[in-house]
Image (cartoon, rainbow, N blue to C red):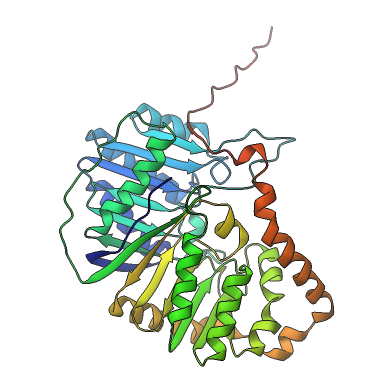
Length: 401
């Protein structure tokens, strides 16, 4: 995917917190669509959220809106045939990234996933987030609903987001044609933005590089809220260096994890980070699914990329880098309120508990996971593809004699 996006001026961004803000905004945009809807997501569940997505898409399809929906072969492996068939019958084009057969009932495509969460409507409004289409992004309704973030953007940056979605479809020959440009996106605000993708071709470190550049240039404050935090050496080193030179470095990580192994890996780093003055807070109210950060007073990033080996070395990811003092302050105020209301500060004493077994685990895991992506690239499944997502034929029921 040879796309390398540059900074775009004249945009506006609206922060969307959790599914209760994100879903109504996305569904309203879909219902207002006139010409085209492009969606990329890791997961669609056939639940209350998935049903509302389907209904909005069916309404748009009835208006002859072109719709391309791309899902991941691992994350959306269990979407039922009735759901797919209803969208197919309405003319919605469905694609699945890197599908693999099950072995002994288990999903086998464990590595390198389409993890991007992108929605583009009419080439005029776009969304970038870490939010999948499912009930588990509604923490206001469910105890295990995830805390997460997205942004709704307008302006010239929408052209780049649409181009990224278009390129995925064209390069994988999932569609024969898709217009190069759909709409003119004149300046609408003061935000400067850059779309940053990571892939396994020409941009394997782009998102990590953006984080590192921001950390190196940070002078006063850095706050990172990230669900799966086990970064490589470069990023880890820059975080510690920033704290040593007097930057207030705050990490908000999982305290009520949806996957216990994620906290185990993250917590193995705590002692080393705390020694350099980095503050660590564990979010306790809900599972944390955030991929959001701010640096100083105008830099922000929101998107799909965690700071772990899967996101930084294997998955297809999409983050927006945003220069906007107002958005930066909004994120800062929200995250600080989250710390005050729902987080527990990690102390050196707590971090040292069990260190006798965590230290060897960290050492082995850190070096294994640093080299694992390279060896995973040798696997045949590493060659990506898009295939049509179609409803499976129903099995014929045997009639009694």
